Length: 160
Image (cartoon, rainbow, N blue to C red; front, side):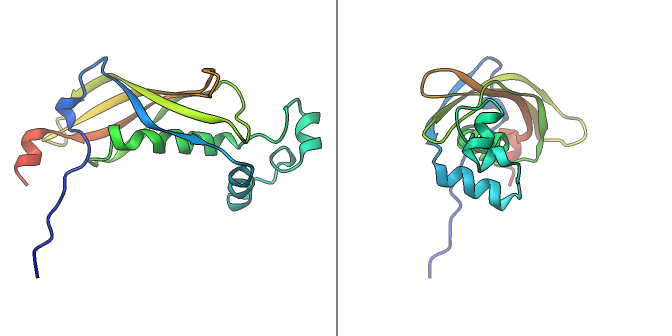
């Protein structure tokens, strides 16, 4: 039996030069089933998420996709480029929802490195911060936020 080998994924701290942009290659189209399933699974029983008359009475075109589902999907679409190599997620700041997303809408995600710094408390690691945005198929901004992760440095990676 052969020994399993590890296949490295993701980028390391040194790969994140400030200003570097990522156009994340996957996009995601939301379906009506997605929207209803998310709301049911997360117990979001606000009528705007399952009743067209209620959603329209609240000023929506129809039943919107729950914004936290849009947020989770946006982060998920960025992981392969930004944080797949691992490192603890440190949080999100300046989260803004600019417009509703509806079933049938497709979002595309991009990110830019806005800062990075080494850490004294965790040798061989640095903190990287990205600004991430998602636009719908019409190019309209639907969500943006900044998030940060610890990111392993190349020298620490080689030392494993």
